[in-house]
Image (tube, rainbow, N blue to C red; front, side):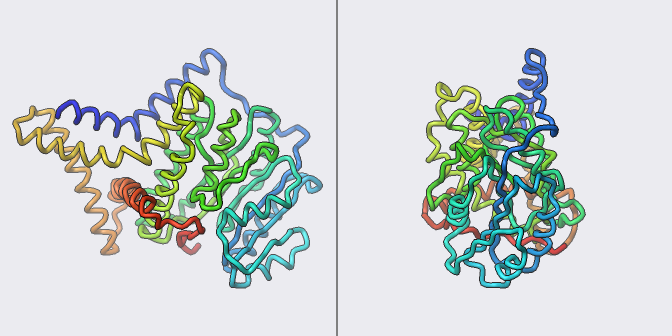
Length: 390
């Protein structure tokens, strides 16, 4: 029982903190022997590039998005803009159609984001394709900073950074901003060691020549597209200076809805990317993939519950002061999480409590996502979470 307890506790620790510590050490060792990876400069002949933006009923924000898009720095003769608005029933397509610089693709049927993206890809003849969401805003040099990495022939995809607007973060989702800061740090180290494990849909790009379409029922299309490229032996680079800013989720319920969908998509992705679990084929990538993604999306939430139960049993059977101390720490942490949940329901704002609350919510979402995927009740159609108003 004690062995199982310590094993469970170790895996939980490794998943959320230990991997980051180990990754930092490995990156440091790599720098000693090979030096720090240096990104290509901006003084180069940039590749042709197509920016694809999927928009579904975004009339309240689409003109702001268009202004942001038209203001991006990139050689105009090498840039093509495509907006796909399939299924939109508001004025989004009409507003976009007034801009001659933009190619509008629209059909009344809503078939999901991935099929809309596939349809847009038939119109692409550029060397690089960049995808971003309609409710995010890119920094001016984002496309230049992303495109420069394709000067390296080993690079097959480049992921930008998601930033939650700090002045708009709700108290209920205060943990979201903290989580993404930590994730950004891990991605920087992943990228420097070898490759990022998956790209975020808010801003990512692919080398067109190595792009492969994914199944229409794919839940996490951005993750699957990028990892299929990694399976071909190409690296996925993380470019934190190219970022997509968005508002936080409107409330914790909306964030939970988004996390459950991601968790269901994570299980689907693991089942479809079984080859990446074999370290004999992908020594470094498999290590990163299992450590950063697979453990989070599979066993770790169950082991959190098991560690708590086993800790109770060991203490009841006369466990030493160490087990009592660990049990106290666990109970305190979950009590703070519960307090965050209770106060959030009463609209009482104590930001410090929402970090443990967000952490527990995130792991509950994994359990709910696994259940939803097994039941077959998670649609691939894009059901976006509501965001706060600016």
